[in-house]
Amino acid sequence: MSDVAKNLQDIQDILDKTAAKWDRESTDIDLIAVSKKQPLDRVVAALEAGHRVFGENRVQEAQAKWPDLKSRFEGVELHLIGPLQTNKARDAVALFDVIQTVDRPKLAAILAREMKAAGKNIPVYVQVNIGEEEQKSGIAIDDADAFIRDCREGQGLDVVGLMCIPPAVQQVAPYFALLARIAERNGIKKLSMGMSGDYPTAIQFGATSVRVGTGIFGARSNL
Image (cartoon, rainbow, N blue to C red; front, side, top):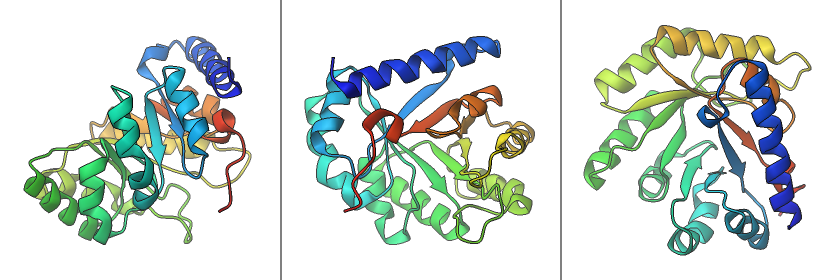
């Protein structure tokens, strides 16, 4: 077994045990393997181990590897989990199966237009700036309800989930709990929250997908 395959199994074991601890079904929680800036051989190792749900941060990087990989491995589900520039919306609609970073009205409108032109209705998540940090993307907490409603009713987007990246602090639980409350009052079932360092806590607070990169692939390249 490759180290990537072993890491995947180890994380899945933790995911299973954590879900059971909080009376949840582990089958309701997707493990998104974050493959950004990872060597191709390590991504292939994950695919050969049977993993099929991946996350990429940049459209251009994903375009360089995933069309070929999708043709070689059936059943891949590719999530965009990084900020999306409006001029890359068409490319994102063409390549990704889920877009998790809808965070502003202009982007929502352009995505709706590009999906209509492509004859697609890709599920999207609204990204919430849950820690109200200036350097991070995401719709403001106070604007989230109105933005979700506009994405659905005004733009016709299929908003299935919320996504967040909490501040780099020890106590992330309050941020996950807040995202869960926003989701509940908007009738949203899916929550993308939790990364390599905090995904067990995210599972406790209702995450339906966790985004793990270094825990699976090791430290990524800075190139």
